[in-house]
Image (cartoon, rainbow, N blue to C red; front, side, top):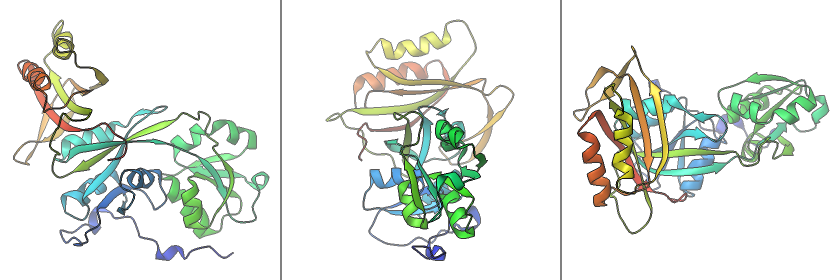
Length: 315
């Protein structure tokens, strides 16, 4: 079998042990992401910054550290999926590190069934991909009657099948992954729900300057003491100022310490009963947003602004 491209020439995802404080001084914006070239996270980076240079990393935290160590200018992390819900470990990473949310990208997935050249769908005995991609294409995979095998990354699954010449295995991944790894597309748009969307956050070392000349969104996380009506009071600070909430979510943290980095960049373990994440439609440049958070701070035991950013998809 002859692949369209030499896979050994592709960049290897960075891990923590690979990271150093020496960065390339190129003028092109560098965006780190978790996964292999051709992953959907890389698609999100390219949607936000079409001319960027992407930096693949092994883990979500590696992508964040690449920005902290100046190996990348920004990181792109998935934060929620319309089917699978929120990705809580990435919320935890926002608190463990001091990067700021500077944008968001909404990406509609076009899942494809891929295989080696010459392999037909009926020859497949198994299909390999990320668990979310496999569950999102349940109808087709059930029809094919194939076994399903989980991998941590859709593009990583494509690379695995291509490099090992697995003629009995298919992959659920992107059309771009098929092009990169020399695979054929057997079927496109195989997701059960055509409206499936994943929301990604763009993170940077420095926050952007909030403005009022276009719609902005602000993301915060806070904790409260236990007591009757405390959460009602917290939400009322926004309702009283006609601020629309686009996301509210609580995460139990009872008896579980969460390492939080404070303003001095020193981590400390703190115990919270619940973490409340809220996104609201207002810029921190607006007086109503400033007074709302000032009001919230009166009874919140912990409050952090994760970012204030434009609501446009293309940044």
